[in-house]
Each structure stands twice: as structure tokens, then as C-alpha cells.
Image 1 (cartoon, helix red, strand yellow):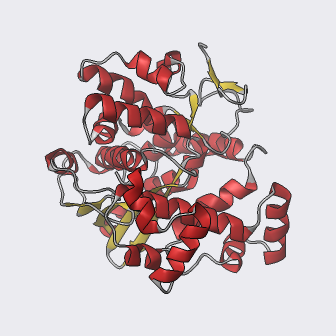
Image 2: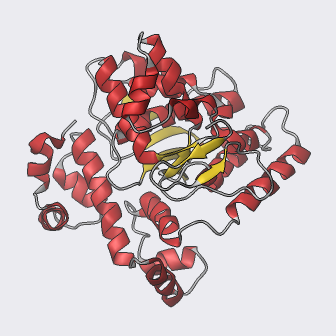
Image 3: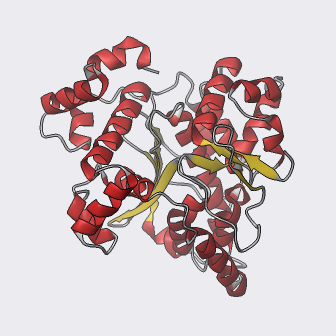
Length: 361
């Protein structure tokens, strides 16, 4: 398998390097470059475990971990993290994986961040371009007054270990920000969509900031003025080359339109700006054009919206103790009873039954 990444269920082969020829393409929906996840292997070894049997049990070839640019299904990452947590008996395993990773673990996007003029440019480059490497989760950057909010959201249906993935993703995001701002940089606070663990010290030690659990999103909160910090050593020529390379990859015609809509909805569904008209405006197209393109891809806007609502609801019910009324409000329901009816229609169970029926983490 050396030099190639194999999609086990599809038989598709892709180049093993993100810096491949100009004909290289972004990855299909539901897949990710190993990148940060490559750190799972050494983390397991630190616990005295041989990673290869667990990697195989998750449905992957251990040789894939030789190269962080190899591609795996996002679902396999979730399975591997679930197995790793169970075998190590470590509830913060995802955090340990993420804190080992560096800005270079983010591949081409991490390199572009290093060459960006300011920290704000770097974070916007991450938000705009992570899809070339990760089609299982989506980042966003929001400015509220003098506060910046960097959020990382898993959007793939029925993703296992979404909480572990969020922990690791925020851990490496903080490492990236420290690489750009200086090693003494710290966020104002960190929000995590997972139940509070018995031992919170590993989180406080890595983030060096207050950590709030049972939140609706995985978010790093920091002063907006930090976005104006200039990145030391940034090379504008190299930046232009990296931007061109990434645009070539994003321009490849292998991206499912419905997945692009899922990515947009995952970051906007908990706001008031996610109607079909809002999304069409965001994409600079007519509402009828949006409907036609979604129809061509086999799904309607309402169906995708409900799919994302169901995914967010499952994650919050499984990984947190957020009250039902708060989940309902976050998903745009005026009353908890309307959310309960919708959830029963999607799953055959009420949210309370789902949370209490072995789904709760």
C-alpha cells in the first residue's frame, strides 16, 4: 500500500501525497487525510499497546499510518478512537492525540497558515480550505464584538466518538495558534460538547485556560485583537504558490454539492441564517438553482436540514448532559415538544429514551 491510500469500501485509489501533481484532487465526502489522526499510533504505544490490532479492528491497514497524507473514511477514525478509549481506559484519549500534533499535521493548509500575513488570515485560510483534507467535520470563525470564536463541528451522519474528535481537533488548533502567536499564547476559554470527565486536569493543562463542558459546540474563545498579530517569517511568494495549489485541488469536479450544503448547514444551523434562501444567497445562486442542483444530487434541502439536525441532536444527547429544552432551542425549535416529535420521527424514540437507552456517553 506504500504510496497509495485505499478506500476500503469503494476500491478508489488516491495519490499518497498532498503535494502530488497539479492534477491532484480534493477528497470525497466522508473521507479525511490521516493528518492529526496519525498521532493515534504513538499515543497507543505510550499506553504500552500494539496499535496494529486496533487499527485492523477499526477496518484499516496499519501501513496507512506511514504517511499522514493517506486517506481514510471518517467513520473509521471514529471506530478507532472508540476502540482506543476502551482499550486504554482513558476518557481523554482524543485530547492526547491532538496535543501531540502540530500545525504541520494540517498538511497543505497548515503550511498555508504558516505563510499567512496575519493570524486572522491564517485562521480564515484554515476555515476556507480544510475541506481539501477533511470531509467529515467543518471549522468556522466568528467575531462577536471584541471576541473571536473558532468552532469545529463534526457533521458526518452517525459519527462515532464525535466528542473525542472534537477534543483532539481543538487541541491541535490551540497548538497551531501557539505556533503563529508564540508559545505563551493562551485562549480565554474552551468549550467542549462532552460530559465533564472526573479528571479535568489534562484539559486545563493543555489549554491553559478555563474549560467548560456540556456545551453545544467545540469552540476556542480568544480576543479578536489576536487575529491582527503578524505571522513571523511568512513568505508571500510561497503563500501564493500554496494558494494556487489548493485552488487547483478545490476546483476538481469530485465534490458532491449536497456535501457542501451539509458543511454550510453544520456551521449555521444553530443560528437564524440557514433557510434555503440564506444558503442560496451565500452561494450567490438563485433559490431555484439551489433546489435543482440538490435534486440532481438526489436530496432535497429539507431532507439535508433534518439530517444535520438529527446528527447534532444525537451528538448532544450522547456526549453531553445539555437539557432537552436547550438542544431544542439550539436547533431552531420554538418548543421542546416540537423537537421531541421530530426526533421520534427520525429515530423511533423520544430524545429522553434515546439518551437513557444506552446511547449516553
